[in-house]
Image (cartoon, rainbow, N blue to C red; front, side, top):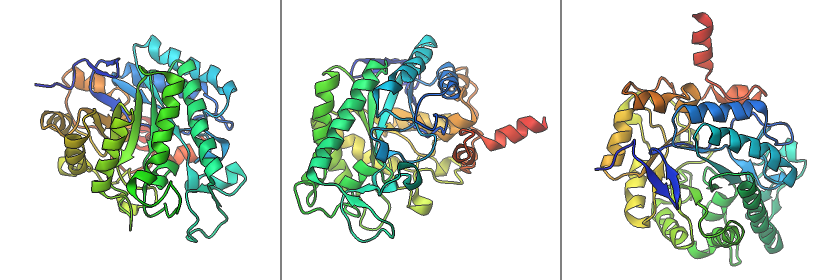
Length: 368
């Protein structure tokens, strides 16, 4: 029988338990995307808190791929030193850390990038100027991911994760709602996943065969004409054959309203693990480790997901904003549910330059 607190491996990366800190925009980087002392301290708290694997907030691989202010960057070499300080701090606590590589595409921060966002295909749905990716630009994008991976490995990260979920650029290639290209990067599923395979191949040339490459993938987009579960499963199988070592399964887009990735009101066990039905299908097909994220708040739910074969790893974001030491507490036998209210108030201070934190907990501690 498998256990949540057992040693496992992903592509040779040894992990002390099956709990993952899902990539979370922290809003703590400098205006130029560099690591700040506050961000390092956040990672130290997570490592001390017992999470088996930390995945950083998404780091943009090119300047025009920045999604928000105070977002981490991995687009130039002078960022490596700060990232190295982060990995060394985590490793000093016995932790493991993976860097998430991302490009926001259509959902880039217009005011910050100072140019029209790049889109997979121009479909007339945007009221503001956008720039459709040419084939040479796609190859530049592939190279940008490879260069970012090189920097990540140099900085000491234990692996990398490709962000292809939640409506960002690589998800836009996969989604019929956004990809209306007529060339070899659009149309049928094989074409829509082509850029991912090119990126995987480019990454392997840079990081080698033994370095873990993960991907975050939508099970469904939950928007009209979006990616379906059936297609997502096929994509997962293609990516597993193409060299991906583990899939973190999520869902929804930042424009999907109540079906967004960070759903609100998860106040009972019945509402937890809201992508588990997709995970059941995906894990049975792909043949590589499946990491499940999405509203998991209870130890009992996490344990059942593992025992029922729904997922191999349990990934959480907002509960670890509320309680960075949640996993350590569960390991000690204190199994009560996370106090996270799933209200998304934690992201507001991040947008205001203060960094993401649990507003409710701060008020409670201030009142005590």
